[in-house]
Image (cartoon, rainbow, N blue to C red):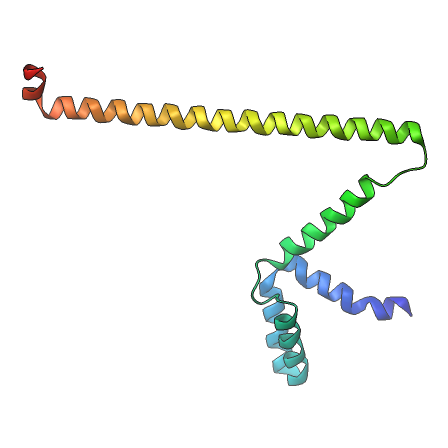
Length: 137
C-alpha cells in the first residue's frame, strides 16, 4: 500500500531530476491525453513555483545535500567516534578554506600577469606606432 501512495512523490523526484523541460513535457502530454491532468500539472507547477524558479534538479540536489549534512552531524552514540568525526570534519573544513584561498590567490596572480602582459603589449604598440614621441623623450 505504501508503494502505491508513494508514486506521486517518486514521479515528482523523477521529473525534478530531469529538469523543467520534463515538467513541461508532462504537462503538454497531460493536456493531449486528458486535459484535466494537464491542467492539474500546470496548476501544480505554478503553485510550487517550478515554472518560475531556476532548475528543478538543482533544488532537488540541494535538498539531498542538506539531508546528508544533517546525517553527518548527528551523534552516533559513541563519544570517541563522535570526537574523531568532529575533529576530522573541522580539519577538512580548514583544508577546504585554505585550498579555496590558494585558488583565489592563483586566479588573482594569473589575472595580474595577463593584465601586465596586456599593458606591456599596449605600450610596445604605442611606441612602435609613434616613433616621433620616443625622440622627444
